[in-house]
Length: 403
Ligand code: GCO
Ligand code: MN
Ligand code: MN
Image 1: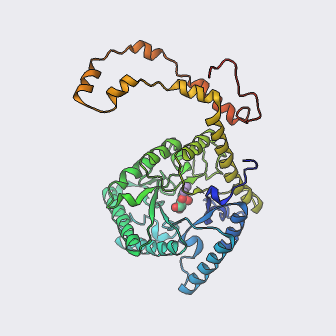
Image 2 (image 1 turned 90 degrees about the vertical axis):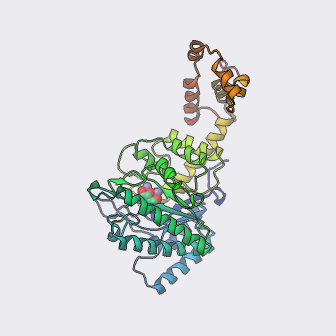
Image 3 (image 1 turned 90 degrees about the horizontal axis):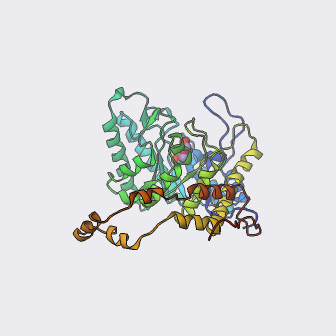
């Protein structure tokens, strides 16, 4: 790798709503004009992205006529084929329209829930027409400010019924979608249902077809909750449920910031990229972030380029980490294996249990061992700071460390 220029093989995607974001926030108006969808496609392709994702209404206005819809979709498909971009993921906007102010699938009004289902099926039709195979559910309005509604248990049941419904719809239509639930703790609701990756993973097991559902974890969302995003992603990988991922960055415990990937928590971003690459995650690396409100068009493309470039640089750093002899020696020293004990602990049997119960352990000696994590972590920091790990530098060999 030389210049960290992305290619479609890197599978970087952006949402129409991300690079198209106009800088509007709860306190201020737009600071820049939006772009047309075909223009976004053209620009993302020039930058080396693989695809573009969308909510139904990022492309087709909610009140468009059937004719208008068809014209917009035709133009968009033309842009995709002209520029070689794909649409791997689609989703429904179940949050902007005032009808969803107290939830969509979890609204206490059965008419709103039915409308949310109708809108979702129409949006799934659109996604399928564009070739999407992953369908995301981010329940931004599924939540509460006050629990006086007394609807918590009903809300979860309504949510479940709706997800079961759309999964059946997908199968009946032959769309073959894999569904990805995207947890978030708050914003726009004070408390959003299924606030973390762990809660979504638990909920999935209660669905009729859990195999069709996975998660779409977002860096900012777990970070807002004060959680470690890499741990959340590891749990999703372990459960075979990492169906999609939203990459961005975020200062801990603040409002939803959607910062450029790697802008804030560089070390966490490094371990995340390493985890994704090591785990063989082969889905899109989707950047769900936007340029700072201060930026003009040039800043928007600098933002998009920056997200992808940082990912590729961190991927290169992960490779260097794997090849760094001192780091590998420190890692090897950290782990202790014991063949005799693994025979006893690998699987329960009455004999193994009996032998283990009578085995003597030198607790004090075990407790005395220093695992060398300070050294290992410092080596990682130095690698990230760029003073070790390139094949041309000689700094990486240190006399004190035995390999
Ligand atoms: C947010 C969410 C959304 C979703 C999007 C796709 O914090 O607003 O991250 O951007 O990812 O609705 O489902
Ligand atoms: Mn988000
Ligand atoms: Mn997101």
